[in-house]
Length: 453
Image (cartoon, rainbow, N blue to C red; front, side, top):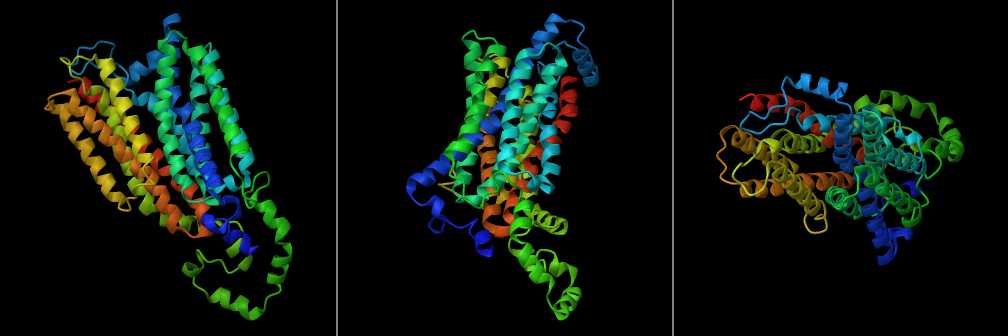
């Protein structure tokens, strides 16, 4: 069984299921499609839910949700501010979309091993399809909000599951996953805008997009070559209980001398090296081991969280305030181009793993924080001469964020021990969501402050 476990993370030349260039390409492209489909509903729901909520509020002028939101902001619907403010910050939509994902990423890594990968993917597909249907056919505000929550659940569970899944394949599939998630932002924005621009209603557009969960289903179950070691329909605990009973019985018959030596071993030395040989090679991680792994992940999670905090503080707190009245684009058009250029930057940098690898993640964090500080002062003192310069900064912002994401998970996969890698990849995925949620909370008072100037 030890040989089976060690083969899980072997390189392509050592694993039969990845032999051949075509098989490697299938794995890479499979993860690209999984990344695209996993983040697609998450991206689209922000715009789609806003459109349908707006339609519902126009049909019911006494919408309680709209009233409560405006009251919470402490503002009104006027645009008397020099920043041409909306009464509600875009951070409100961000929080509704990120908090379910954050909760899942904080809790799921400790229990998700009990759920086989096949069941996880089916659950994500069902959640994504349900979110499209709920928002499309919603007749009340709460149905649209529930649809956004389902999309967030699908995306959050899918991200930590597919990142953990990469340990069963060659490490180059991380490049495919990163590129696919970057492509989801660009494809989702362009496809939704394009279909609605040609005259389709948001409801019909969302029904068309039901093809995306179906593509995820096909990509996982029919396109990827699943290695024999992958727990597809049985949990790890079930496999270990069935295959390791004899080994465990033999270990329990060990000498008293070994037991005494174990008791004398300091807890710190046993933290990541359990004395039970079966547990060391193939068994489930203990809770203590998981806590130790998380401690070792902090050097990756903190820089990633800081990058995404600065990034989404810009996107949801400052971007809508970077308005140039004398530019040839309207305020709404300027904001859409900011978002589009950001997504393009993310796509390019998340696809760059095959060309360049950046180990010093704190450098990316520092540069992103400097971006946020620069744009914060630019909003306050309005010293930037043109939107063209902001376009360049926003594109650069996307490049930094995408590079931080894909390099973080690449170096986690490189530095973690084989047995710890699957849990580590899932647990580290909380970094970006934690930064995004914190940015959304801080963006509220920042938006209010500037709009009251």
